[in-house]
Length: 154
Image (cartoon, rainbow, N blue to C red; front, side, top):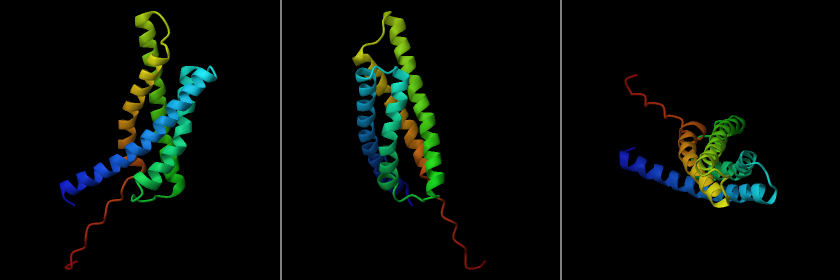
């Protein structure tokens, strides 16, 4: 496959990944705000719980649409890899939210309000999107390399 075809295919996968991610982000942001502002949860706990709610949509959308043409290594192994990647990404996202809130509080002397909390949360999501795409593309839903053709002389 030539470079142009590979880039076109990568762009298609990337676009589908971003659509699934956009929907998952809406779910995550909605759940995060519900947990924090309706239920009064701690920011980090709310971030982790909201990420887990969005995770269900993300797996189904990515497996069945964004990476549908990828090899299936077995549902259990794939789900375990998906969960491991998302555990890492959820921890990283929660750490970014915590650090952002601490930096805002340290620089202003007061806890950040809803607007700043959501800006920090969206920044964490943007960073995690890039990390997730590469991990999904190269680890979770990877392609199995095609075997080299056997020459007739062999």
